[in-house]
Length: 185
Image (cartoon, rainbow, N blue to C red):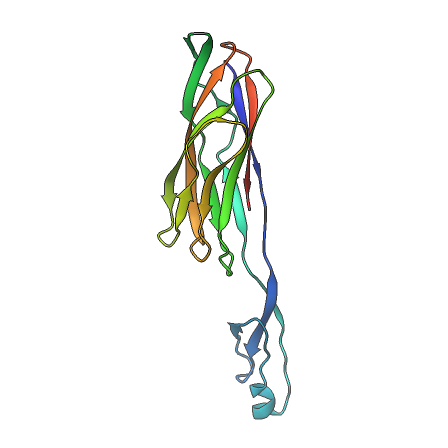
């Protein structure tokens, strides 16, 4: 029995800005967020100028894959090839970026064992209510990279859990290895 190894490429994207603190009430810690700004209220009311700068992190774009290699189901002989099919482990994309530019998740299939390219059918397991996702097309014989899903700009924030049904044609019933690299940008 062979296996397919799933690797994930993690891309973190963020930016920083400046936050301001309203020091008009000395001893309190009221902090508001803004790209640029400082409070002049304290200077006018107390005569003591106070400027507070805080770095605000914009958010992250994260990719995670359920742990472990994928063990292929037992292949069955089908003419001159062995065939196996199953479901990829769950893939989770979390986008907390304030700019909400959307994202794209793709897979790159690398097969050095003489099998045929991967065929897959992307599927959404769960998604945040505010997300607008478009699945990649079902692909028969994917060579190179294929699209799993895209989140629309201004509608990508949140958590999406995805998977894909797959099928492989193998030259032999045992000893098969391939790599599927997932990338989110």
